[in-house]
Amino acid sequence: MRRLSSPITAVLAAVSTLVGAGAVALTSVVAVVATAPPSAALENGLARIPPMGFNNWNTTECRAVFHEAMVKGVADAFVASGLKDAGYTYVNIDDCWAEPQRNSAGNLVPNRTRFPNGIKAVADYVHSKGLKFGLYTSAGTKTCNRDGGFPGGLDHEQQDANLFASWGVDYLKYDNCNNQGRDAVQRYTKMRDALKATGRPIVYSICEWGRSDPKVWTWGANVGNLWRTTGDISDNWSRMVSLLKQNEKLAQYAGPGHWNDPDMLEVGNGGMTTTEYRTHFSLWAIMAAPLLIGTDLRKATPETMSILLNSDVIAVDQDPLGVQGTPVRAQDGLYVLVKPLAGGDRAVALFNSTDRPATISATATEVGLSEAPAYRIRDLWTDTTRETAGVIRAGVPAHGTALFRVGVDRWWPLYPPAVDLAVEPELAYPGATPIAMPGRPLTVTSTVLNSGRLPALLPRVDLAVPEGWTARATSPRLTPLLGRDRSFRTTWAVTAPGRPLTIGGVVYAKGLGAHAPGTIEYYAGGNCSAVRAAVGVDDEKDPNGSVAFQIWADGVKVADSGVLTNTMPAASLQADVSGATLVRLVTTDGGDGMNSDHADWADAQLTCS
Ligand code: GLA
Image 1 (cartoon, protein in one colour):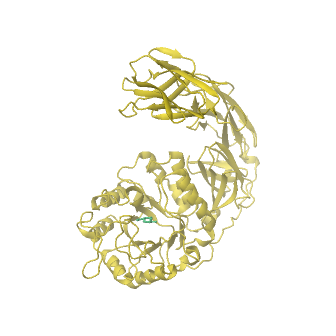
Image 2: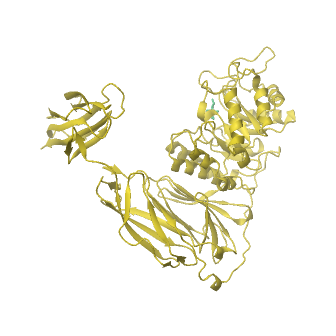
Image 3: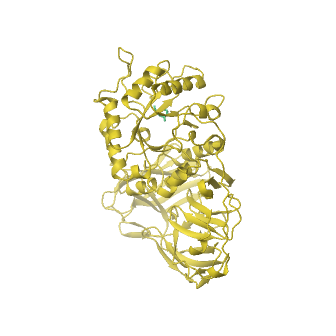
């Protein structure tokens, strides 16, 4: 069996129309421009839009790979890859840049191994590329690094600020570790004043994690340009979503010069799928979060770069109105987030936090647009502009986000109507996990819906399936005309690749195909007596596979095949499991790593009363 884990995406082609354009009166509408929340800003004139740049922490932490050449390489990558042109400006370094002790004059000393030429040399290099340079320390006696930390700025504020300014620092991240229980407002205000006294413009990033009482977002605007609202991000889906949920409630505190900071980006670090990284980037943009890249840009893949360089999404984040978007609806894990933009447009994110594909929709009124005959709607990930009569809708894959820019536009008849597509696989029962059996076609229904004001001419549906899969239309995929609010369904036979279990040339109709090492556990509740199976390494892999198969009855191993390889026929394995509460089928990697270890339990049978 195979789960439909890679989403089936459908592609709509050749949808265009100008039919009837003349029949619809054009109305020009004045857009309502929302005003920024009134919080007072720190008076340093900086960060009028959320800072964009890089910080090494998420990719290197304190490992030895963090050093001068790396930072310079990142600055080079900013220029070479177009990130600089896209608006990324700050090349920031995090913890572990310093020696563990101050010098005899009480000054911080750059780590001699990582930064043999000092910090100023790095800052000069970054500046020579037309970029800005950021540094890190903590509002405590030591920084946060788990190896004991490096000297912090508490009670050294002016001396450290002067040193940073003399090195050409443009951005300071001021952390919260080892703060000796002293008042947060006082600690952070003291560094604010010290930075100001240097006379150098330095963006001030408060890294207090939202711990103090009163909360940092209630006093942060007077003290810093941005403040962390959460603990640290990590490179996984659930952590990223949890930060979103904490940060999205705080929109009223953000504005030009003072931003909520849900922590730096993990895009490109490998712990999430491309769909999830697009969601991460879309949500940070709609929340007007700082966009600090946290991946090693010297090694970033084209896929990572295409996310980080999406200028339409960046423009949502960097919009001069400076309003943090908020959810207008959140139900059953499906979110509609809206960010008012300068000029009256709205950015709208349709975010599916669930594990199933879903169709999410909102109306133009709901997202705050004024009445109009139709609206311009731009999909910021597919780069297409269409017209909608008022519904903003998308079929969104599990963990995905559709991001739109929607606005009143009197030229709307020039755009093709917005059509969206829902794809529904046939399910064993309502709510079941969609399953495709290799070789056995699964029925999938696609539904195209026209939410444009005008009819769509000749819409045609293509179903894109993962490599090795096939999709065949079993009903027409083309229709001459699709009117407003009309839908068009196509059924598809989708076949997953795969072969039956085969060991030593013998084909088995049933059984369990697993990848070693692993454990399949059954609750037997004392009611089962025997297990038997023909076990072996599946023929589908090269001759390197080697697996040992074991049967366990509770804590006791009751059968062991010894190591079997691809070149061997199936072995018959059986065991008495009478009275066992749990029966476990265990596969080991045969002692040589898991490569090619496709472990088959063919004809597996558990006999129970
Ligand atoms: C804290 C911060 C992180 C990072 C580390 C460095 O955990 O929240 O962003 O700066 O310290 O030690």
